[in-house]
Image (cartoon, rainbow, N blue to C red; front, side, top):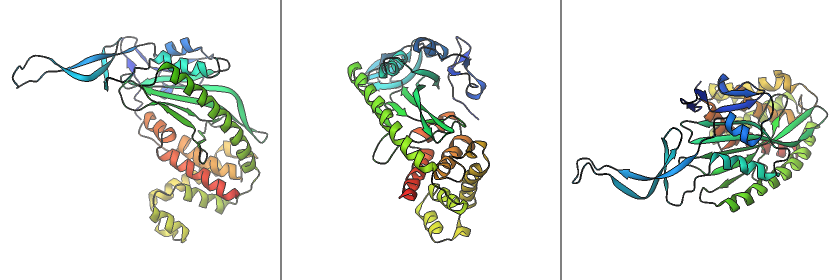
Length: 339
């Protein structure tokens, strides 16, 4: 499976680090202690800067050929250590340096309690990502502790905003739990034209989101852990969560299960088998409960499903891809079941 991690030929290292856990595809650096922001920047190979440079074109075959012409109002973004061109941007685009992304995290809680878990760069270094653990847990029952994470990604190629998302992760099996509650968002997007003051204000909004969602998820997941669900109900909830289109939904609702495609059945059965056999699904809060049904869907997308590469997995889980849509559907179905 491709990884798309940046490889820096000058240092001979891949741009990624993680704390204690095996690095991405076995690549990158593993450290034993949580680093501060300056160390994390260095461990992840993100200690480079990006600059905007005037953009020129050479009109070969036209009058004046051989002369470079400046392209007005457009610039290239260049990585200053490797001199690689990362993208083309407009005149209003502001580069957010990698160190500024870590400063964003530090500013959220004044640097107290933030623990940097992973960070890295993709491609030529045009996209970076950081995962930081917040203090405290979401506690479900007596056995399940869900850690609270903030995930940030930004790019230097002119595509996409700075995105910061709250994403709880279940300790026992690292299931990414989609925390996008109804009528709420677990993420904010910040324009690259925003100034430093505006970005700092957005940082505190992120902290407010995480605090609110922590309280809501604690209450909701605890309720779900007390609601029993039968195996046929579990299987049907999984099928409804995985529905790709209206035709499949109508077949399920009408009981025409023999008309479901092999591909759809394989996906649904894999999630069902995960619910029945995964060690993380066998404790009192998950086995035979509504909370376990929700975790069957999130666990499938985090631990069972195959992705083209890790970047595709992140997009699917966190940025409106298939995994996020299906886990949101599972969340809504569980809410409907409660009601």
